Length: 187
Image (cartoon, rainbow, N blue to C red; front, side, top):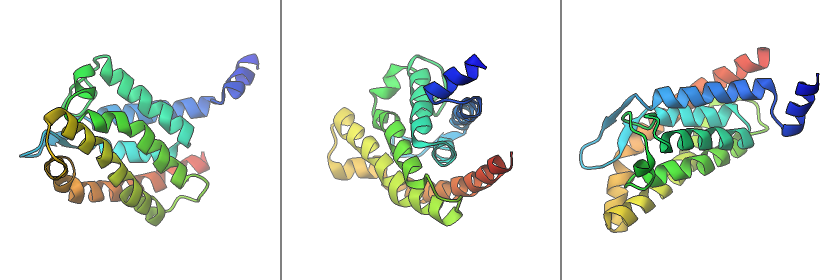
């Protein structure tokens, strides 16, 4: 009984921690589903789906903590980043802005979705209108700084070729998240 009270004071229930662990594992596994896109250092990855689902299933605070945990685990060397990579070099390389931005972007996406009934249209709109552009900001900035390219070149390397796939992944994540949230309500 004392343990349950201390968890409640910390703001985490066993259910919260379980959902966070499952979302973290989903992010880790989905990052292995990736492939390179010609003319860009970025990878097309299913991780985007897992990050959106995490944002739609967890509260903003839990989303932030979960995605920070993912980034930290990858930064210390676990090969859980897209392409089976890990280490600090990924955070300070051309795509590092994506990694560093994900906790904040996912928390914003979660905040926009919070307090509303699960809705495919709402989730898809949030992921497409807020999630995708905000994610690109970090990636574009890091490519400009690390590769010393101008904004147009960075847009062509970090955003433009990925837009169609990211829209599709946003739709897939909205579909999955609605079903997961409905299932969680029943449990």
